[in-house]
Length: 619
Image 1 (cartoon, rainbow, N blue to C red):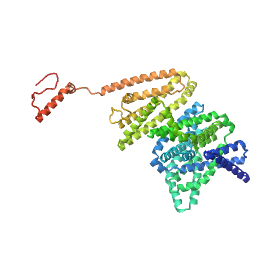
Image 2: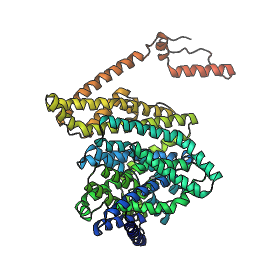
Image 3: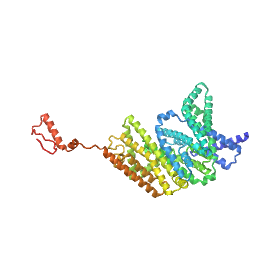
Image 4: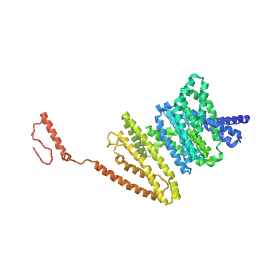
């Protein structure tokens, strides 16, 4: 390889990246945009040699490894265990909803299932660097809420690493046979288990021993060497090199000298990271951006809507105020580094084309440009929306918020054991909701494909197979719905003072009271029918009516059975019950008062005894 060509390429790429970053820094935008713009300029206005392209590819892989290693170094598992419960709850709400939103949005845009999954993974997280840079320059949130956002970003990174681990073998599946794909999955599982259970236990001890017995220079060299070695192992088992370096970063982060390692490798990371984002920009053609401007705007709109709504929901469910949740969610409305990593992997595996890839990069750039303006105005936007919201709608939202507040107040007054039980049930309920959404999304995506496939290979009518798929849909979500109803009823019983009075859900809410008194099977089937009505799946409308009539017959049967069982459980009244039911309560009270007055010696009136009215009169 020509040394002059190497030096020329490095000088060109780095100086151009520095110049573009300086320009964007003047308008308060992160250096990341400058690196991407440098790559776009090189790809569209500079004819690179084959040597230059090889240099960029090598250095970009090194940049990806260093970037992910540093992200892993920032994750302190001990801190997450102590302070990250709320962040985990927010991420647990956000990530699944973002992925499902991306899958549904991609299906509406005509992408295949794997492309839809990649789109959901791409838009599922935010940029740690961009968010941190914007938060430092603005005063929308206090220090505690900023730390919470950082923890949410960390949980997003962990979640996206898991997502990338899952979709990498799927993206490579088109190049493997069934046996090769199975072997890859087994190797990946073994690699992840060994990394988690052995690496996180042994590696910090090794790093601590080196830091105590050897110089700091050797410690840094060892840490970087381990990062590249772990990346190599990940690549061998079929994972991205990014996952291996990230896991090694998490292992080193548990050691005592992790901050020193982070500080010493920062300059090297910045150089290689710049090369990675330059290589990302070099995949973009200006003509392609112009041709796909509509898709870029759709991708950004989808990402912004999903991130703001899902994070706000996570904050609200975590008992945070609506205003703080909205301002925090707007601060996260920028597509992250994993968007570039996952998109690049998908492009390399030929899962997506250049138009898809360019649209993702364009949407990410647009989000970085808009974030400072949007974040600075988030408080005013919330206040304006609340002020101009119609009173009935505002009252509805306030009522829902009061229900949530009352629910958490009831939990706070409970014992520790009760709170733990409620938290477990709430976790199960949320998992069941996600399962229901996944099942329903699966049926929406495969319904028409299944009908066409069944007619082609098994014959019959479209209506017959449409009815079968609807019935399968109805049955598939019934069991998780039944479990969900049982969990909700249990939670209600745990947080109320009286089983008959719905304190946590609001007194006087007859609809809610009647729902929670309904038999579990009946209530689950009612919700099942409602979901089938509301969710479109491309099946003929009249087939829906037929399936719903069948479901209603089952519902009536279950209702009749429940009433019969209830009647069998009611005790048969005895003669003693009939006697006490016939007692005149007022005369009984008068008798007791006279008896008490007689015993006290204060009653000088007629000493006759008034008998209890049971049909005859005695004195």
